[in-house]
Amino acid sequence: MGYYGELCTRLYESDKSIAEGKELDFYLSFVTNKDMHVLEPMCGNGRMLIPFMQKGITIEGFDLSEDMLHACLEKGKKLNLAPNVYKQRIEAFTSEQQYDLIMIPFGSFSLLPNELASQSLAAMRAALKPEGKLLLTIMLQYDGIQEIPEWTRASEKQFQDETIVFYKKVHYNAEQNLLTSHQKYELVRDGQVVQTEMMDFLLRLYALEEFEQTLASNGFQRIVVHEVKDGYGEGTYFHAFECGIG
Image (cartoon, rainbow, N blue to C red; front, side, top):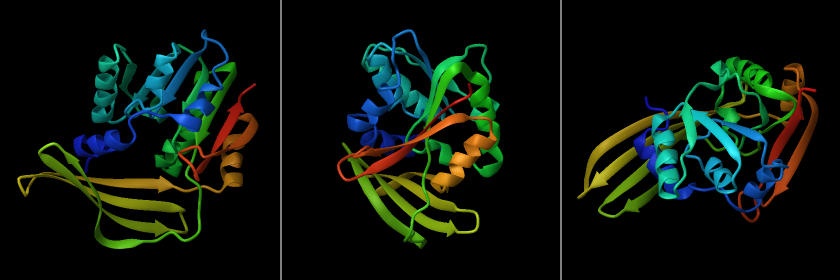
């Protein structure tokens, strides 16, 4: 079972290549001077990291997916940038460098199961400067979750002479607040499936107050919840937690 493999990354990159608009502006607003050092755990394909680099901000990132990191490096190369990114698990992260800002956008923190969430927050707390800030979003609980018990064709994307077709099944465990999306990607060329990729995409859904308490119990203070309207486009919004350790 892959984790953000080649086909998943290609499809993701075609739709979510570069952060922009109000989402990007929100995160950039926390960089108050060019001497700040920024860390982006779970940086993926560099959709946020690359625009930060274009602004001349000192930033590094890491991720578990080699395919996503490769996409980030290739994208940087086309822009004459050299992203400082590497493969790393967030819960095991250590660094001699301490950071002014650590950011985990786009709800990526919700990919961490309960047993790794506290370990990861401890690692981030240790990497923050005393006056630094952690900024992250999570996936929120919501009503009307629809389960999809059988494989369902969700989307497809044409790439010159080949197509990537995306299928999914969805299950929700209300007791654990865990949304599991079983995903299948098929590369089709000349009407034939030439490559298949499988992935289980687990999301821990939180209530706002629950995650605020999670941050507090892991030693974070000055917790502020921002609601960013139209953050992912008109009619959308996300909540971002801002907190520190001093």
